[in-house]
Length: 273
Ligand SMILES: O=C(O)c1cc(=O)[nH]c(=O)n1[C@@H]1O[C@H](COP(=O)(O)O)[C@@H](O)[C@H]1O
Image (cartoon, rainbow, N blue to C red; front, top):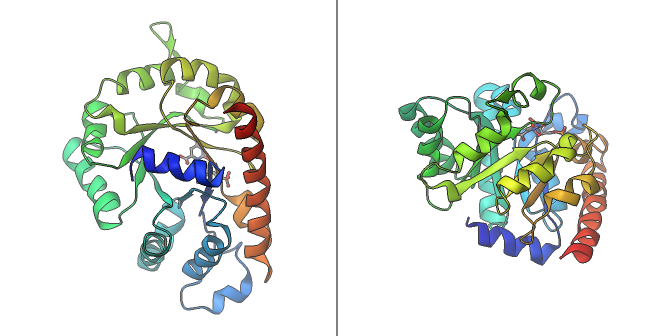
C-alpha cells in the first residue's frame, strides 16, 4: 500500500488507530479454545467488529511463533483474511528483524512476498546494509525502531553519541539510506516529550506509536507534537482493545474500546487539521 492510500483511509475513517493482534491463548475467551484454530477465530471476530474504526492491524509475530507451525498458520490465515475481505486496511508485521544483507532480504521476502504484509518493524542496530534490503520493495514500508516505549530504551537509545542521543542519530542516518521514502519510525507513546525533537528531524514521516492503553501513554500528549499536516501517526493499542472482555461479548467490548480511541482521534483531527 502507498502512503497516500493509507492517508486516504485515515481521512475517510477519521481514525489513525492501529489494533495490535497480540493474541495470548491464556487471555482469550475459553469457549474459543474448542475451535479448530482459536487464534484465527479470535482475530476474525476482532477484525470484523473493528475494521471500520481502525486503519491498521499489527500482529506481533512473537504471539504466533510461540505456538509453532499452528501459530504461523493462524498468522497466515489472519493476514489473508484481512487482505481478501478488507483490502483497504494497512497491515504491519511486528517482527523487529535486523541482520546482514542477504539474510535481511529473506526476512523481507517472508513478510512482504509470502505473507503480503504492507510493512514490517526492523531494528536499526546492524545499520545500513541490514535495512536497505527491506527498502527495495515497492509500496512496502519499513518501520525502524527509533525510541521505544519500554524502560530499557534509556540503556542505549537516549545515550549521547557525539553530543546527540542515539535515537536521533538513527533517524538522521537512516534518512540517507536508498529508498528512505519507504521508512516509518517507531516512537513509544510513553515518550511523548520527545516528539517535538523527532518532528524537527522527520517532519513528514509516519510514526508508529505503541504504548497507549496498557502501557499508560497518552493519545493527547502524543498528538500535541506528533501530528503533522498529513496526520503522520499510527497509534497502536493491543491489550487495551483486544482483551477488553474474555466473555462471549469480547468482540463487542473490543469495538467499544476502539471507538473510544477513534472518537478522541476524530476530535483531535477536527481541532488540528
Ligand atoms: O514495535 C512495536 O510495535 C513496539 C515498540 C515499542 O517501543 N513498544 C511496544 O510496545 N511495541 C509493541 O506494541 C505492542 C504494545 O502492546 P500493548 O501494550 O498491549 O498495547 C506490543 O506488540 C509491543 O511489542
